[in-house]
Image 1 (tube, rainbow, N blue to C red):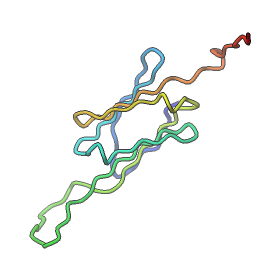
Image 2: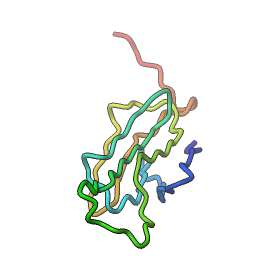
Image 3: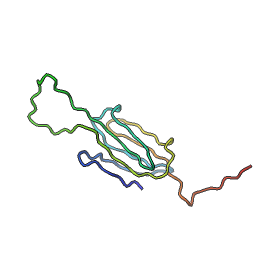
Image 4: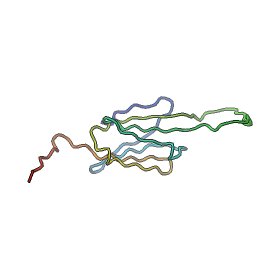
Length: 116
């Protein structure tokens, strides 16, 4: 659970913890705008995409001495298993993306539902 694939160019630092019936993923994404963040769920994988666009230097007025900031699309995937994607919630505040995932039921937690 929570095996992940990390983009080599930009490491989205995260903390993952559990409380009650949920897992919580907190990812540091300073400098990103909310509209450039995207979360997808597909076949048990939760994918976080973050896009940072470079400022265009259309009139060539900027002469960079040094450039360390990176631009592009960054991705991180987490395997969360068979969860109900409609119960995944996310919020972004102060450069931190917080994702709450309702835990999947374990086989031992399966219940038989009586039909009336």
